[in-house]
Image 1 (cartoon, one colour):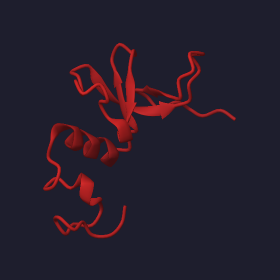
Image 2 (cartoon, one colour):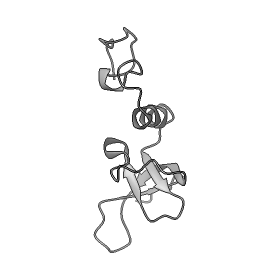
Image 3 (tube, one colour):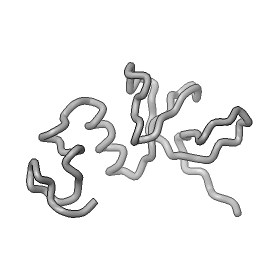
Image 4 (tube, helix red, strand yellow):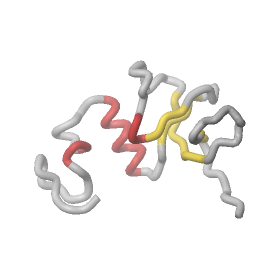
Length: 93
């Protein structure tokens, strides 16, 4: 993320994430998550999670129970590509 936004002239974000250009709730949440290093959202019941690039694909969210999280490899055996968890998971080699 470098260069200057064509919409507001501020360096540090891309035009599609500019608060002047895209001020809906999904984009505001996405900008906040990126700013603080999160990789997606996970619902508090653990039943669903979504990446920043596909935030709230259910189009109902983010829901009140959604929390910021980090992407981890799937280990549930159900064929998921990833999971989003609330805390950072220490990587093992």
